[in-house]
Image 1 (cartoon, rainbow, N blue to C red):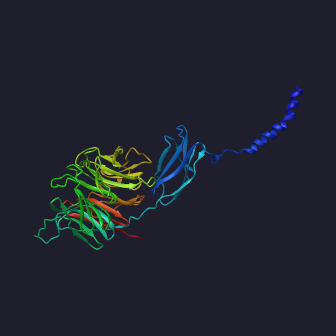
Image 2 (image 1 turned 180 degrees about the horizontal axis):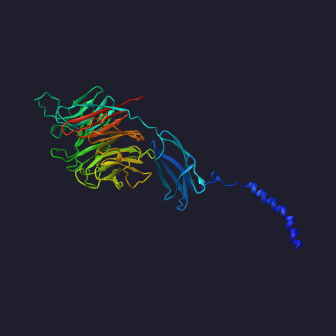
Image 3 (image 1 turned 30 degrees about the vertical axis):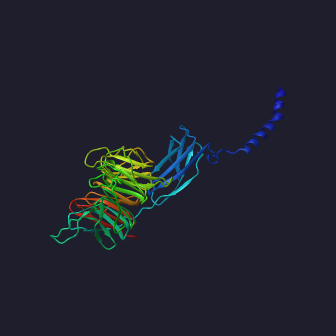
Length: 455
């Protein structure tokens, strides 16, 4: 017994010295000092005035491990990973403000990322109305090149004195900064001349303009230079140009340049032009394709082109189609109603549809279902959407309604700047501080030009 006690007393000081040395050689593992196994990062993918899309990447994936997302040091979300790549949208931010985000995986924090939300834009638009035809007429679309070069297209006849007739239709009106002038569009079809009455216009510059008129037409600002009669119709005898069947009338266009144009129309028609030749793209639907729009993914640089297909005169389930590498895939349609005519987006994380309501597909909230959060904006049908950015776009449609979104709030100009009428705005373009909306009352073309006051 005494021998054991002596041994302990002799070695106790050595044990104590060892423990003190061990404690001094180690530090407490705070989260900021830990290094995770694998990779873990947070990045900002896109911002609007009130939204931020945050992407979390983690490898390996542990489905039992909790991820905590913090904004400015406060926890806003805790969840478990379902995959190595997660996109989250926070949609309750304030415009024009800086925020700091980081995520914590178990005990391991990511690097901090900072973002600044977009500021709001001005609602201060003032509109003028113009009469462009004194005979039965309608305007269907418009393209703004600049404030002194705007083209609106449709179906009109020349302004003539009472009792005079001109049976050659006018297909366009042009704004030169001072006045609107009617422009006839003669074009050659096989062995005869016709006068175009386009449904849509796409403009890259003052001398590089494209019309949808059953086929696709190039216009240099003064004359028609090339007709691509790619649809099989009565009177088209040039079989070398035909790639689409009868009834595949081209009605809408979108493109990033004259070497990259998409044309869509009736009965599921889709065609692509690479600057040299047209190619048919199988859509997989016989619904009329009402609109097509495209943009570039800011992260990957990939072009994203999406169409909306619907039959407006019957109750048929709409389709939302993405075109990639000349192949079509379908996007989800959960939450949508029947009729839609317009699609618009800039980033790829939030897509807008206009028609029987205003619907959005937000990839950071629910990528599988459309939301009608803007449904209260208008009681009327939305025919067209156009804009500069997510904090500066407009809608137009039934009864002369034009509404502008500034990133946080909407302003409706009907009744104040734009008189209510029994008809529709069918086309609209917005560029910089200019909005031009066109349509018809059923017998008369309607045209409003809006300019934003810069203070």
